[in-house]
View 1 (cartoon, helix red, strand yellow):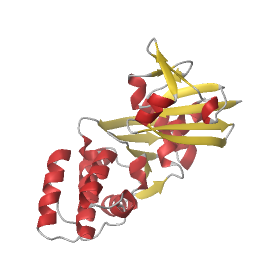
View 2 (cartoon, rainbow, N blue to C red):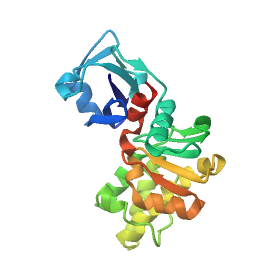
View 3 (cartoon, rainbow, N blue to C red):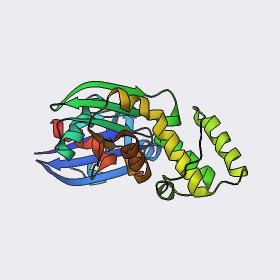
Length: 249
């Protein structure tokens, strides 16, 4: 029997359909467009036309930032961190690791031992340690997220701890004449510094990267260099929460 996992992220909606241990269908949707076009909200619940999106109308398990505000009708709800841990276990095959999940508006660090979550920390009060921060800073630099993720050397120091002040500081560094490559490396290092305290407190020999931030290869290199840990990049980092929903079933 197939199971569909839905991760209601702040920026994107991720949907995975699994049959046994095999992923048979997946979809990634802009959150606002998804809520407007893919379902009907009534009585505090949202009915999603999964068949219209190409998914089977079987068992559905939902998680994510958005489930706080929108409940998927007929879906079982599970905690977001639990879903991400199950996803990381399923995708990596590891049992002992620290999971770093960089989402659109928050960051989660979870320590796992013998396949069980033993501790976690989150930073959900400021966008400065999230994927949205990377999006905004790439926009200021006039480059794509893909290009931003290329640079990790000769980083310009950026010290602002607020996303808004961070943009102002970056503009000041641009005016000073620093090359884009050094500025982009500085952005990536500044994100690492914001999550480094959580990584140090919940340290492991293996760090698994998940969420949209896991697509930033420069960040992965910086974390490996600064922590000495082995970095595992999942094959489907953005879909990790949705995969975890299915893996838990």
